[in-house]
Image (cartoon, rainbow over all chains, first blue to last red; front, side, top):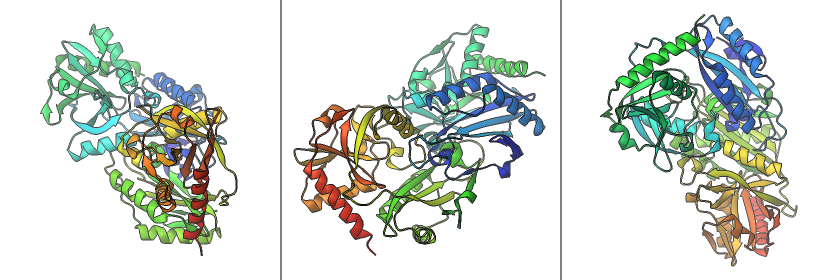
Length: 282
Length: 282
C-alpha cells in the first residue's frame, strides 16, 4: 500500500518515524478515521474541523492546510486504486528536545493511510455484544473533546471486552454514567426518543453522532442528550453505537443480557446507509 | 549517539518505528527515565520493577528479561563512552491490526537511548518556580500508577507553565488536591514533617519519591502521605519536587508568590546527592 508521509507518497514499509518522535514517546498527537465510499471520504470537512479544533487546543501547527489535506486524500485514494476503505490521518508534534515541554519542536509528522473497509451494505447484520468496563473516563476533561493519540484507557477497556467475548466495551465516567464505547458513541431509544450522553459526560463529539442528530430531524424523531445508568440501558427499547468506520451498529447484548430490538433503530440504520451513499455518489 | 533498538545497537538516525506502531498511534506503551552516574544507572532495579508492573497491567510481553535489559543498559553506556547521562527506556506494543484491540500484536518495540544529564553537583542552585495548572488529574485511576506513553495531560499542563514563565506545572486532581508536577512528585514540609500526597490522589509512584522516604528514615525525619490544597502549600515551611533526572529540586515560588526556605529540605537534598554518589561509585 502507498501511504502519505510528511510530504511524500511512499510504500508503507518506508514510512517510519524517529524513536524521538513525540507521538511515539508521549502520544503527543491527534488522529481521525474517515470512511471512504465511492472513492470519496465521507463527512471529510467535519473530520478536518474536529482535527483543527484539537490542533488549536494542543498548539500544534501543521505544515498543511485543510485544502492541502483534501488534495492529498484524493491522490492517496487514486494511487491505491480503491473505492471503499478507511482513511486514517495521524498527526504528531514530531521530534523535539527530551521532556514534556513542546518548546523547540518544529516539524510535525503527518501520515495518511488507507485500510480495509467493512462492507457498506446496510443489510449485512451487525449486532454487537457490549460489556461494561471497569475503566472510568474523566468527565468534563478538555482532552476528551478530541481524538488524541492517548488511547490507553480505550485499549485497556477493549482488552477487558475481548476477554469476556464481547465486541465492544461500554465505558462509564467517574460519576457512574454510561458514556461511550472505546471507539463508538452510545445511543439508546426510550419512549420513542433517540438519546445519547451529553459531551459534558466525557463523550467524544463523534462525526457519526452528529450525523445521527441530522437524520433524526429528517425522520421527525426526537433526539435528546441525557445521562443514563448502565442498568437503565437494559430497560430501554434498544441500544446502538455509532462510529465512522461502520456507521451505526445495533447492540444485541449488554453484559450477556439481551437488549430490546427497536424498529426506530432499524429506520435510522437504513437512513444512515442512504446518507453515506447519497453524499459519496460519483 | 548509539541507541539500542529492537535487539541491535544502531546510530540514532537509523532507529525508526513503523507508522503503524501502536506507540505512535495510541501511546500504547511505557517508559522509564533513569539517572546514570559514574556509568551506572541509579536505582535501576526499582525502575525495572515499576516497568514490569505496568507491562503486566497492560498485558504487554517483552522479548527481553530484566536481566537482558540490565546487560543492554551497561553495553549502551559503554558504547557511548559516557559516565553521566539520562537513560530513557521506551517500550511499545509494536505493530498490530487497526483498532484498539491488542489481539494480533506480536512484536513490541524496545528502545534505549542516552541523553545529556544535568550536573550532579548538589551545590548547583536549582530552584523552580511553580504554576498551578488548569488541567486535572484523575485520582484512583489504575493507569496513573505507571509511566505510560499517554502524556498529553502533562504536555498541556507544562505548556501552561511555559506560558507564564514557570519551570514546572502543579497539577490538582478532580477533588482539588495538589498531586504532583508534570514530571515530578510533590513534597512539602509542615511542622518539621516531610509530606507528600498519597498514591490514591493520582500521584505517580516515583522512584525518587521512594528514595526520599528512605532518606527521611535515615535522617530521623517524620515522613507522611497526606493531601493538601494549593493555598496551604504557600503556608508550609518549604516545597520541593523529586524526579529521577534531577533528584530533588527546591521550589522558590508558587503562582509568583514566594515559598518558605527550609533547612530540612537542604538536609534532604544533600543526603540525596550523597546517596546517588555512594550507590553509583565505581
